[in-house]
Structure formats: structure tokens, C-alpha cells
Image (cartoon, rainbow, N blue to C red):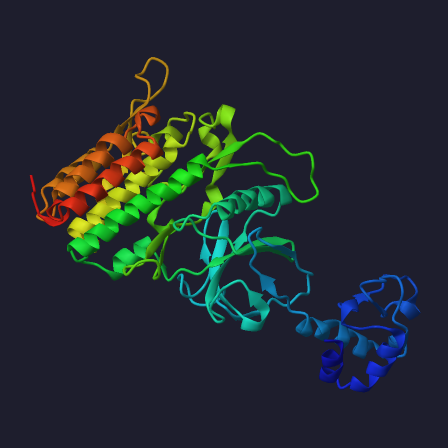
Length: 453
């Protein structure tokens, strides 16, 4: 690396001086000497001895020293490794990342530029095959996520949760490959997905209503619920590197932002692909003693899917995810039964103006009744009328089979309940969907024979 840098600068003859001084690749990168002495101001030092200038460079001109300080980084691009304990890298400010494609500034969209979220930006990269031991295929794409947060404690809390998922891997939870800190920002590397679930729906506007296709949808619904079960029951003890004063109490998880955009589609796994829960930027872990006692004002999610307890400023629990998963499932059934065009109309059907702010329109799945002011009825939530009507219309669709009826009832009677305490628990939800799978395997007509009301 040292010799290659010298060759690039046409200073290869200088290699003898470095060899005589015992300087080799292990001394790179050379660092600038911090000195008030003008004659030593442009000196470079080995990283091993940052206060001692390299003698054979003392006679170099300033321009050569500057060019070496810059060019050496072309030879020092890191090699990223994927290990079970998830490696973290602290890269120097001038480090050149080993991407041979970087789509952060490309045209918008998941296949082009960065996708901005509330907690980070995600874009596609291609890592040079000689500089990665992360992925099986040498030229495969990866996704890099740059977190908006810059404090170390929050970063390590997020990584600790993802590391726990690596200890007990689940095929339908996104897999963290590595993390790094660069130019005072934190990054995470994940496998790159071809699309998210909403893009998958759009690309398949009229899904085939065959046993094979509908059974895949049912299996993936079960897989998502199974992955969420892991999140809800996952426990971890967080400590940042070098910090021994950490809380030893177990903590439990909640995703906090389940939506079609955060469900990724990978082409492998089954003939029709595999759905994976991603974007744990909102995942919250909390102590067992207070696992259902988080103030609503501390939670942020996607407004369309958010449950009523946020608006009512009630305590938020893992039932939050049951509501958002119910919204996701209802959209999925809409696509399966009525197609993409109907799904695009669903937000418009839900839109209502707020009683106290008529110019403000939302498309949530609930409506707040009452003013909550002194002497007035207290605020309470009800399932939005348009959502109930939408579900009733789906029951009448020609494709509505016994499975669709049962799934819609599960969504409306056990998931989209305004009382968080009344919502189905994730373990029970898994059992209910598994029972549907058993019925489908015994009788294919259960899935695809239309029985509209």
C-alpha cells in the first residue's frame, strides 16, 4: 500500500528511505504532526508514533506531503466482514468507503436515490468484491442506512436490539450485516431488497386468485406475525462498548412503525419470494415492569396507521403494533380481493376533517368523538365509519372466500379495536393464522372458493 501510493505520486524511488527507517504498511495512515514549529508543520508521522515525524520525508516539498496525505487513502479502503457478533467499524474522517456503486444521490426512489425516513436515510450500494466478506455473491447489492441521530448511546441501543435478533435469527426479520461510524455519523448495512410490499402490490395490480398465490399470502401473513412475536418477546441488556455501568434489567421490544413500506420483499425463500420486517428505527425496548406504560407523547409513527391511544394521549403498549398490523392486513386483503386500484382509493375513502380544525384532514382508521373540554363529553375513539363500510364491502366481493371472511373478522373484531387492552395478543394472533393455514391445507376451497355475503 505504501509503495502503491508512492508509485501513484511518481515517488517510488523514495521507498528505500522508508525501508531503511522501518516504515511499512502497518504504519499507515500517516498522520499530520500537530506542531507550532513552522518548519515541522507539514510533517507526517506514523500512526504508531504520532509525535515523531518520519525522517525520510523531512526533505519533501509541501505539495508532495499534501498529495501523499490525500492519496494514501485510496490504498486504505477497508474490508468489511460479516460475523455473528456484528462487527462495528470506526472509520477515519478521510477514509474512502469501498463502494463501486453509491446511489445516495441518484434519481429518487428505492432503486435510485436515498429514501428519507423520520429516523434515517436508506440507499443502495454495491461493495467491491475484494473489500467485503459480508455477502455470498461478490457483486450483490446492499442497503446502507445513515441514522439521523448522532449520539452514541442511542446508536448502541439500536444495535443491541438488532444483535439480539442475530443470536436467534428469524427469516422474516431483516438481518443486520455490519455497522460503522464515519464523519461523525452512524451507519448500518443490511441486505438490499428488490422492493417493499407496497411496491410489490403496485407491480402486481391484479393478483392471481389461485390456491398457490393465496396460500403464499396467508403464509407470509403468518411469517410477519411470527417475526413480530419475536420482537415483542425479545429481551436484551444494553451496554455500549467500554461502558460497564449498564442496566442489567431485561427489556422488551415493540416495532412502532409497521406499514407496507417497512415490509421488504426478497425474491428468494419461496417461489413467490419472502416478506421481511424492516426499519426498526422506531423500535422501543422498555423494562418488563413498565412494558405497557410508555407515554404516548414519546412515540412517533406513520400517521395513517397510528392507533387512537396516541391521539388520546394514553399509555402505549405492544398493542400499538397489533393495531398497525391490522391496518397492514386490511390493505393486503383489499389488494388480494379488489386489486391495486381499489387499494389506491382506500386512503381517500378514509379521509375526514377534524371537528375542531375543519381544514385539517387525516386518513387514520379511527375517529375521535367528544371535545374533552370541561363540561363536555370526554374524548373517545371509534373505528372510522368508512373503515367499517370498507370491510363490509370486501365481504361482498366475488373473491371473498371463507378464508377472506375469517381474516376480515380477525382484523375487525380482534385487531382494529380502539381499546388497546382488548386487542388480541401476538401469540394468540399467530395461533389464529396458523389455524387458517391448517384449514387451507385440508381444504383448498377454503382459500379460493368465493362465498360473498
